[in-house]
Length: 424
Ligand SMILES: [Fe+2]
Image 1 (tube, rainbow, N blue to C red):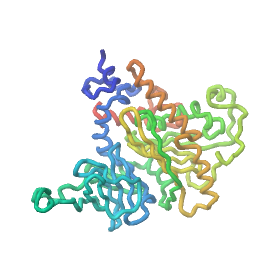
Image 2 (image 1 turned 30 degrees about the horizontal axis):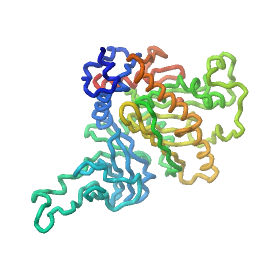
Image 3 (image 1 turned 45 degrees about the vertical axis):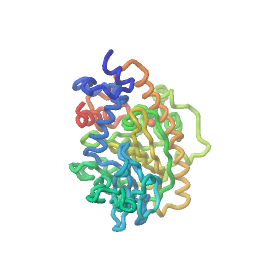
Image 4 (image 1 turned 180 degrees about the vertical axis):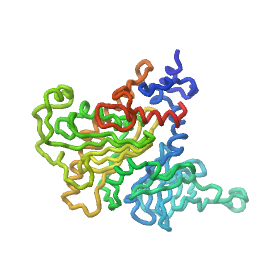
């Protein structure tokens, strides 16, 4: 029985050496990178806790001194706080005593965090400040005499911010956030996060039954856009033939799928034929607001979807804006935390427009729901079929950025980077 079969049955005990990724070939992706618990452990160590800047929160979610938010780096629970000194801190949400996630609320205002189990108490700066019955009771019990609170602080992460977005890294060696993003990704990032104050409009959360990397691949895969997404193609948010691009950083780990809606584009019979799964001739929307773009950005693109490695998607779909925060939940699932926002100073009409267009996205969004389902179909294939490999050969010879939808070049560049970091 080949090793990969054992891995697909969920064993933790198979050495990574037993999993062979064909040398030098980026056009084939072995199934086991999506199904192995051991691969996920290595991803936690080398990616999420490695030399990466992870998204943790938007500053708008921590509006005051004493604001906090529960968040995740990979699947590691953390707390983001705004301290008395107006500094943003990120530390592990794990009681030093017995490992309980001591902060239980999603977000709020606090002076301190009290672990529910034995009331060990932490301040907003992430320091252990009290332990009940530390000196025992009536001279009996209690902690050893040399017990020092300062030896039991939660693990801290370095913090970097850019225009209202908070990132954290566990590695002391991670480059600056700006160098990490690179100029190509930063240019797209700064269109949405220009420094204008954000106004949070709401949250969604859903579990997707697929490996977390599939979400990155989905947004680095422009090929599926006009084939899977009936809404996108039929109502001309994105059709083959319109101006579009995949913009990558030089490392190949981040990418922005960009397109420019063009209502004047002629959709000839040949294109209709290629898109026939998704393009419904003669269908129209009763409410054109869903696809109307109110110009507001200095950008040639009406849609940009940026995947910022390893856990952030920045979504600008017409006028609906949001971020998606990826949290792996074992090899076979991820939790997606969606935060939708506009800007302080938006008119009421603009806020309503953004919220209406927000129906395109989210767990059951007109577009989002297709991807959620496709990711489950992929994972089912990896889990249930005879172990094999996926094929990503479109647009041969290219890697990274491209100006055609019919390409898998940026999936290949992601896996070049991934294989290096993971040593696979
Ligand atoms: Fe999609």
